[in-house]
Figure 1 (cartoon, rainbow, N blue to C red):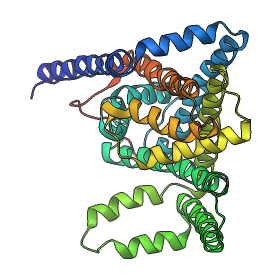
Figure 2: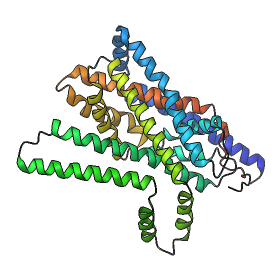
Figure 3: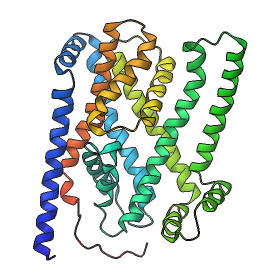
Figure 4: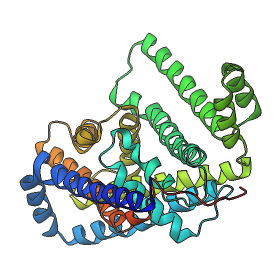
Length: 338
């Protein structure tokens, strides 16, 4: 394949990605969602003095959210390719663009990896997955801890056997949380157990596993802390938008319900086309428990869920379109010793 054909294919792929991203955002907001009801909620919210301030505060946190992700990814990818913060942020935004229309946002890995100029794509993908797993672990741990407080309030354990069951669930939640953190930090016992599972004949898997093992534990601890900080940021954004739509829920109680919402969403294998609808349904189920049998609250929760999707995913994805020219699916890579 000559250079001209490769360049044409790259250009065609970029145009296709940009078109699919714009189509997906349009479909989610204007076709699948109840756009009229959403606009009505926005108009009603603007009438209150606090709406603009709270919505603006949530919007200001968007660059903070994705900057933390860029710092985290740069930290992981640095051993195989040197990157500036700006280049890392552009790659992250490009990944968001591709992730919109792929199942479980798998396009995020491709979007980042194919902006790299020197690194082996498989190694880059593995390090990207390591960062995503760390973020998932934080979400799961937060959800497990929230479950400890959620069950006695909303499940109503009154019988003796139910109280024993609850005690067992508390122990299980804390144990799983500890194991997930230990796994994230690559404690030697966990690593040895993983190696015993993998057959000696699976050389490629062992080779790729070494890419993860080369990450220093100090680096993984920093990545874990950045993932935790990022979780605090985007859950805080959700809370700000709930208050913007005049939902009077206490901060700590809201964090528990938001943690349960993200916990369940992380466990649902979603196809991207249904993502916004699933987010809204899960949000209404958990956060709506605070406002039983209230249609007004359900509409406000759905609007808050829609708005956070727009500012945290749709807008960054549109910004990522500006950088998809960095994608290189067919070109040769420069050699790098890392």
